[in-house]
Amino acid sequence: MRVAFLRPSLDGGRAHDAMEPLAFAALAAVSPEGTTHTLHDERLAPIPTRLDTDLAAITVETYTARRAYQIADQVRAQGIPVVMGGYHPTFLPDEAVQHADAVVLGDGEPVWPQVVAHAAAGRLRPRYEADGFPDLATLRFDRSLFRGMDYQKVMPVQVGRGCRFACDFCSIHAFYGRSLRQRPPQAVADEIRRSGARHVLLVDDNLLVDREQAAALFEALIPLGITWGCQVTLDVTHDLELLDLMARSGCIAALVGFESLDDGNLGQMRKRFNTVGGPYAEAIGRFHDRGIMVYGSFVFGYDHDGPDCFERTVQFALDHRLFLVNFSALQPTPATRLYARLESEGRLLHDAWWTDPTYRYGDAAFQPARLSPDELTEGCRRARQQFFRPRSIWRRTWTRPHARSPRRLAVYLGANVMARRALKDKLGKPLGKREMGNGNGEMADSRFITVPA
Image (tube, rainbow, N blue to C red; front, side, top):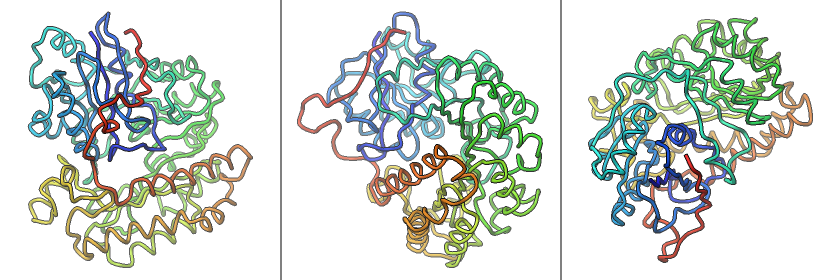
């Protein structure tokens, strides 16, 4: 049985910040014996116009849904069955199944062997969904799938799934509910040791699910001598012992969802816990004191945001020498509380912005309370431009975590240059494109590898 894993890009073009898609490595690890896999990642190279496979599996995010549907329609026209999985098909299976022979809802590993067996027998079902969430103690990744691929040199590693918070705008809680699962800390450390990776990104949406588990993980990472980054909530800065251990284990960067400087916005997004431990400045200082660079994430467009919110937030980020930032227009994604609220209030600008050909990446998709949609779109664009201009990058360079060593300085400068390039590649572009592959009927440069299961 031949399976082709397909990873769409936003608009059919390359992306310069592509990392290994772990979902496919997890599926490849549980494929039935005798299955062979090819990986086509459109962020690295065009997907071939024609595929030589028995089954195509596509992972779909909301931002890549339009492109995924375009690819799926062309693959099915070749007589190849398509299965889709990921957050978006889980939330909107009736939409996704219009472009697929089967849709996997929720975590895919428990049902994947059945999907492959049914495809081999020519009897795929429209939907597959596991009975509950799988234990992650035995989770494995077949990273041979990525051999020879031109991904970022930082290795993504998954520790757990789910988040203990339920923020208004976030799809994590909508997908996992109250389910919080983590792999044994030593299993994570052993995976990293076997890989030989020196730079790792722990890709969990919130690494701090359980204090004791986090401490055990950090202890297990210390002997590896690696550097790593993560996403974590601000409450880690309330526990100085844990924060010290985090730094000792090699953490050099943490993405933190500050989201807003306005307490009213934090209340509306169900994230008042952000300021329980004190002002943002104190939390940033605790990270910086331990050599941890802070990647701040902010969203604009909640009901307390007026025209001055952009300048105030940019100035805050500059004054506190943040490593990187994500300045985003609040995005209503399916299945979130935010989406349901804005829909009920008649404030959505598109029936489905993710498939609307007029939507552009970075555009406001709803009517804000105190801004026009154009003001929100332009304010975010201007904020990103101000933060990542060369003068700003240079000014932020001379901060304890950023310039404490030549290697750290290289990380800081490289990440900021890449962020500038990624914004230029994405902002203002429509989602999806007209044709797949190179458009002339010939095989595109697929950079795929065939590996046995």
